[in-house]
Length: 113
Image (cartoon, rainbow, N blue to C red; front, side):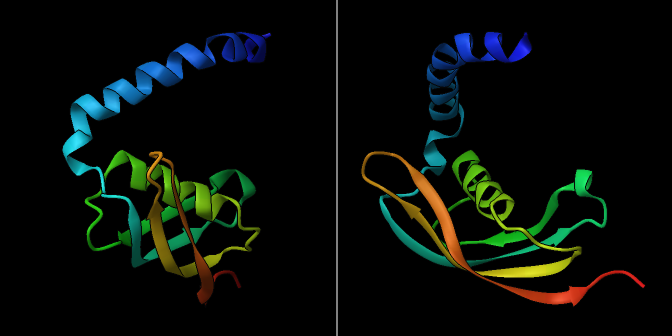
């Protein structure tokens, strides 16, 4: 039943979230454009662990909630085995306010025995 409630409140929560982001972190919003950078992250051995961002660097993008969301969305789309990875790519902010991170992922180190 919880997912029905989530769907019912999602539009209102999206508006509230956008307003809260703008009010608190609006000064961190990147101008529309494409910013090259890297993301160093690890994927845990167990599927429930997900991924952990160690470092994210996109000069011109100041560690905003928008960068956080875009980075996590980008690495969660990848089907990777346990290890340490580096994403070489771009943070892109569109004129309509949408954003994404994309690029190539290279395995830096394997984990496990």
